[in-house]
Image (spheres, rainbow, N blue to C red):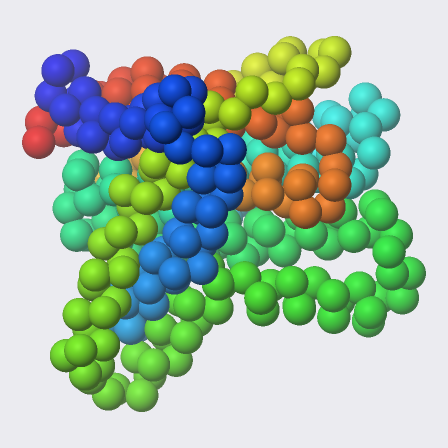
Length: 314
């Protein structure tokens, strides 16, 4: 257990540092959003571009891993979406709740935790998972929210709006740009390599501190939000990794290392993406913010247990 905590302590230590700085007012009320913008628009895209620019097609072409992770995420999304719609929730709000139950924090926690637990071998699966989460899952949620809000009634205009939203997402554009650059088979100049390494190395620590700053913000509560947030958190931390293990180990029969990485990635707490989506569309975000907080705190126990069961002693 102590060895497992050594894997997790640096990750959650950075989250706590951001949390403490905000609660003590060392960093101001806008610090979370500003630091998050730095991560989303500069640091994390630099890391994703660098990884994809150096990845080979043999590494990226992992259809069984893609199927495992995609099916698990889609299943959790569909489950909560159906439950919330049956409870009379508006389609737009139900979609926000659904993505909160299926959106693992691969970008903020996945990369640093993967490096600590599995080493450099974790970067490509984590990047693939991040692309699936930020592109496919986000696209699905955006389509449903747009349909629910009925901002565009014609299918082609709705499709164009979704494509524009995805094209402006740096977490989608940067890995695609990296793949296109890799296809050219041209080496990056040393100065560009240094630039990407310096900027990319700031992604993980700044993202974790930003997450702590976000969690420290006090938000108004809503009647019934706590119970729903507990349900969504349970689906995220327990059901999603369980389904991922079954798909990875029993259905697609991935290698033991990929099974472990897929399960850990699926067991990550809910990222801030669903909250950003709710804020962008001005939807109710009480359940989403509570889910992020509860799943982040709860994942200390669940991730520790999983890593211990996997026998990690690094």
